Every structure is written in C-alpha cells, then in structure tokens.
Length: 270
Length: 264
Image (cartoon, rainbow over all chains, first blue to last red; front, side, top):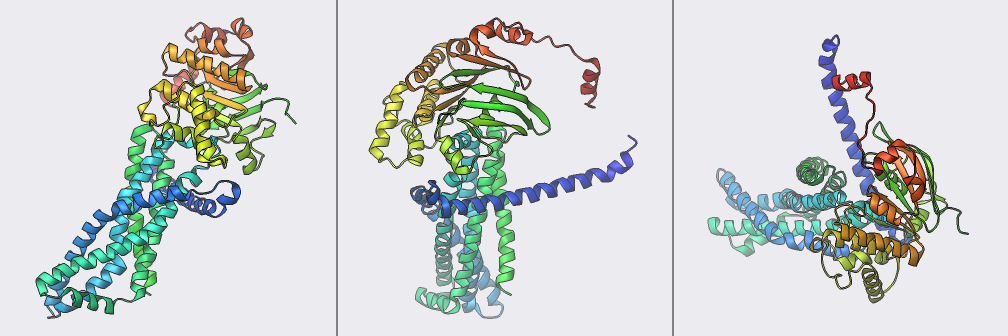
C-alpha cells in the first residue's frame, strides 16, 4: 500500500519493458528460424538431412496453383477499381486516356505484390500456423525430434522454398489479372481497344517496375512463412491455443507485410 | 565397446520457470531391462522422460545414453544416437497428414537409402508385430486409441532401436488393450533385447512387465528396486501409491496462510 504512489508509474513502465523484451525476443526468434531454414537447405544434404524437394513441390501446388482462382478474381477487381478511380480523377483534367499509365504502374509496383501477399498470408500463413500448432500440441514435433528429424528442416525449409518460388509467380499472375481487369473497364467505359491498352501499358512500364514488385514478393514470402511457422511452434494450451496462434499469425503477417511494403517502397524509390 | 550401462542419470536438476521439478535424480538402467518409472501426477516422471529424450536442457547434472553424454556430444552424434532410440508418446504422435504406413516408414525414409518396396515390406513387418497388418493405408484419425498406440510403437521399433521409451502406454486404453500392449512390450524385450523405459502410474501393468521399478515423488527418487522390493517397501509414500491411499501430508500453518493471502 505504501508503494501505491510509485506503483502508479511503475506498473505501466514494467509492462512497456516486458512488451519490448518480448518483441525483441520474438524478432530474434524469427532471425534464428530463417537462418536455420536456409542452413538446412544449404547444408542438409551433407549432414544426411536433406530438404525433400518432393515436399516442396506439393507445397508449391498447395500455395501457388490452388490460390490462382482467388488471386485472379481479387486482382481483376482491383484492376477494375483502379480504372474506375483513375478515369474519374483524370476526367477533371480531360486526360482519361492516361489512365493506363496509372493502372500499369500502381499494379506492378504496389497492388500486385500487396494483394498477393495479403491473400497468401490469409491462406498459407494461417494454414502453416494451424498445421505446425496442431503438430506441436499432439507432440508430433517432439516425435520428429526424437526420431532424429529436425523439425525446422522437415517442416519449415520446404515451405520456405515453395514460398520463394511461388510468390513471385503468383505476383506476376496477379499483375496480369489486374491489368486485364483495367483493360475490360477501359474498353467498356472509354472504348479503348485491348491491343491499344496493352501497347500503352507496356510502353510505360519498365522492367524495373515489375522487378520492384517481384522483389517485394520475395520479402513477403519470407515474412509469411516465418510468422506462420513461429506462431505454430510457440502454441501452448491445446486447441484453443492453435486458434489463437492462427489468428495472431494472420494479423501479424499482414501488419508486417504492410510495414515492410512501406519501408521497401520508400527505399526503392529514393 | 558396449558401455557398462544403457542409461545413466547423475544428479539431474531441472526447473520449469523458477519451479524446481527434478531435484538431484540419480538413475541407472541396465541393458535389456524393463525399467518402470512410477510416481503420482506432478512427481516429475514425464519431465524425467523428456530429459532422457533430449527434448529439454537440464539446469545441472548429466544424462548418458549408451555411454554418451547427450549434452556434450555433437549434433551429428546425437543424430546417430537418436536412430538408436524409439519413443512411443502418450497420444501416439503419429503425423496426422500421413497414412499409418507412411508414418511407420518415416524413420526409414529419413535415415536410410533403402528403396521404396524394401521400406514398405519393413513397415508391414513391424505392423504385423503390433497386430496391425493390413492397416497401413488408413489415416491415423481412422484408428482407435489402442490402434494408434500400437501404430506409434511400430514406428518406434522400425529402426530396431537399442532403447525404447514409453510415455503412459496404458493411458486411455481399456484393460484388454492395455494388457495386450504389456504383452507386446515383454515380447519386444525378449525377441530384440531392447532396453525399455516405461513411464506410468498404472500399478498393475507396472508389476506385470517390470524388471525394476523407480519410484519418483516430488522430483526425487524414493526408491529403485525390483517388483518385490517395491511391494515390500516400508516407505510410506510408496505404500500410499501401491494401496491407492490418499496423501496425508501435514499442513504447515504459516505456509498455508501465506499461500491463501498470496504472499508465498
């Protein structure tokens, strides 16, 4: 009771300190995890613990091919929206035909990677957290370890390979779908032909614009994998814990994604 | 050269957070013996098993499996050691995304260069040993509790390990299934000369299969001896366990007060 005056400030300070320490600890864990994943990819074959390419392949199908329909629909819609907004804005200057430039640049540099990232975070990030979390709860992770199978090598590395291969490809697909969405709207609203639209679009965008988007998608791939898996590994408390970890993984992955996007956009455009 | 003992634990002290779980455990297990680690809930027996499996790092003390100190050996030596260990977890811990057959083949697939058909045959042989012949294409979710434990056992013995560990083999099983599992454990020891460590609180099964019994209580070893020695022990806590008597610990009034007021 005598301490209440000091305690009033001490408690929030303590909480802040604890939260900071937790954050740094978690960040350190991410770094260790990514290092270990790449370590097994590179060194595993020489240590009689190779990363299975067949597992990575089936992951690629699950992460990439299965996501294509929904990526197409969302990207197409984004393309249409960009076209509508672009036409609306540019009409005030009488420059509606310039809308292609706006669509092409914003899609390749920003919306393609971002929408793909958010979608994959929702699909794969949550699935990873739930799968690894369930395995953790059922002692399957322990079972792997005592069988001499490194869980990071077995569970994380193949997914990381699959994500690093598929994310840029899906992003490219998303770019095309969004461009197509814009083309359909421009054709209906402005009567702009598809060939003219494509010609205009491709003259404006440079390889650098597309590469910027693809580079971002690689960063997103790493973020989604790490956050999904690490939340799965840290599950405690049964089925409820798995649910919590899954939610946390998706929210965190999308938050980090947007923050990383902002950071990279800033540095890549200086 | 064969080491003197299969498993040696010296002065093992472990903590969970700040709470002390194991308090100076010494344990020696001989080659080819079935050693039962017994104790009530919270006695630290599961913790001891997890340390034997190298899943946790101890505060102090040392654990030697087949003569090798698991804290000091290199990762690749630990890897080799683990191919000599089989573990049957309480819930089976079969990988739920794989069929029973794939689960049993997993250690072979990861540690050997055998071709698929050989691995298939070996896995089916081990499934026959645990009376699960013909079940290899089912998923773990399609099996009953007893079948999952037997499938997990098949996976644990597929590499013909020198040491086999069981965590609560009879938990959640009916008396018949549990007795079958006991017979299986005896059969394995007799036919394959494995060293077997079983953590359990099932008295009946413990007395049936044990060569020696280690009784743990509050993180310390109360008694280690043969079935007869344990049955005839004069230690009160041991008799409490054997006769299913409730604990009659004296309550320290001051400590009790502190716990209630939250000052402990």
